[in-house]
Image (cartoon, rainbow, N blue to C red):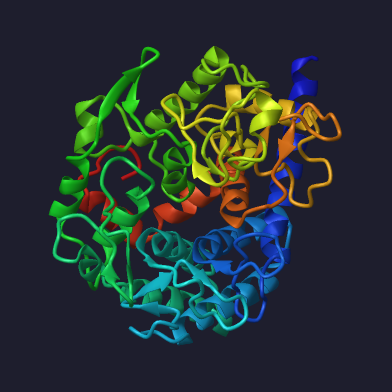
Length: 433
């Protein structure tokens, strides 16, 4: 294949993959309140993180011609009005409390389900989407003025100091039945965006010491000759990057190691491919163009053991590489979302996923996860295939493809005062800052 033909194939695949992933937010949502289903299964509750990704994706949809600006503004305004007016207080069936929101909400009523936690990181992803909407809808008509007003008001309502519960770092969340969760955001994880938004708050900001306390829990590793701040699941190296352009900017920790978070995610992406090539556990399918280990659904723990040599398989789990857990389950979305970091290895993986028919019969693009080690009933080479699509998988695909193609969301978020202020208060410098 010559270079021009390969470029055309890549562009077509990216366009189709982005459009199908974006469609999730059009079809798996309640337009009356803007809530987005966690999964495309009957009865699924809404995920507030998926709503944040949807709010970030609507501007991309307008720019790519997937929806009109008026339709995007109407959907966005319905979402923001819902969160502003929804029951907000310590009651166990509210929507949120102290500016934070429950992880899962009823799609129709918008109230808490499953006795889930008031989630600090999922609220951060929701607020990032709200701020993206406020930055994009800059018109003078009433609806866009209201979008900007509500986005700002909702961000200002979050009480980040309350979420610390007296400690230096931020807690994972709170339940009305038992109070704060015992876990905190420490050790390198997906919470960079949480700390940046918390530090940038004009009303209840985190103190700078909270970020320093978080950095103090990092672990720098050398693996397969690559040096990086390690986290096993690939999504950890991706989620904050949906909104923040980390190229050329660094905090004190990264400056001390001569790196930045973009380069760190690039190394993590290559590390995943290195692991798949080595394939120390001998799983089927792993290789140079077939990799991507992250938090994902899986084939399940018991009923499959006899079909694959007594191996143990898991259901939903935060899988990681190279230190595990790993049961042979791969996630195409995890590889594709690393596109901005390492397109030279992600594009061949994208083509491979297309060639083995992981898009067959899937309304929103590639299957969420698959396990080639488990024999498929129809003898497909991809083996077991996840039956569900998940909102927090679909959003990063559409948005990181766009960041690769045009830097669109990154450029948009650079204009958001909360992002720039939060980064500076965290000690970031250099580059576009």
